[in-house]
Image 1 (cartoon, rainbow, N blue to C red):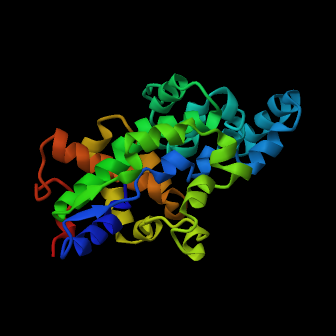
Image 2: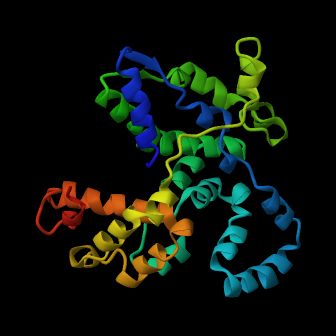
Image 3: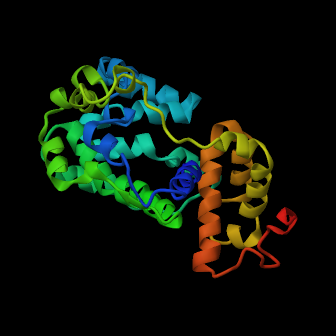
Length: 288
């Protein structure tokens, strides 16, 4: 997760004077703070077309013209029919057409989000929240918080994840949690009288890292070199041509390149037990 870096910077500042800090992790997953918890307007409008027209003409034509457009159109109906797969389709960086682009031909298991979404009996949005609470939250956000805070000797606490609040938040109907499709509407209403209006009504701001800028610079060249090395290609996860295709368009594929680079480094360090200063690691030209 590239947001690890700005989060680590914040924890480092906190660690100078503070040993215990409250963190807002979990608020988005409980109160629908991400756009992927709502069907997009373009998806709603698209589903107003007759099914015969969508399946018989529009989607086949989109497959010929733009595979990514075809993927986006095809996922529209999943919000109701398979919320877990809809969530995966809105969060994955590598849907099938991008796997094909990089030359990946190995079969993949079903998305974990689908299994958890199927567990929950309720409206579609709550099923999406439940899926993220059981996957994205523990496997990314809480892991990131724990590692960055502990590295700075700060204990991070997450009051949103008190089990009583989680249970109450998930019992609220979608129309109360986010009336009119407004993200975190209930949470904002709960904060009235406690926080200034300019804070409550402020737009959502994430801790984004400038990955496209990195990939357009020296990190893109390093990624290209590392991902095309023979020991990387031998695994069969991607091809040299596939990596070249991604790196040729860093503004479009920056986060995909970053994810593959992190996977590659993780495998080398923690599976193959290489070290960063190994003669054949590929970082020799990064030395000062």
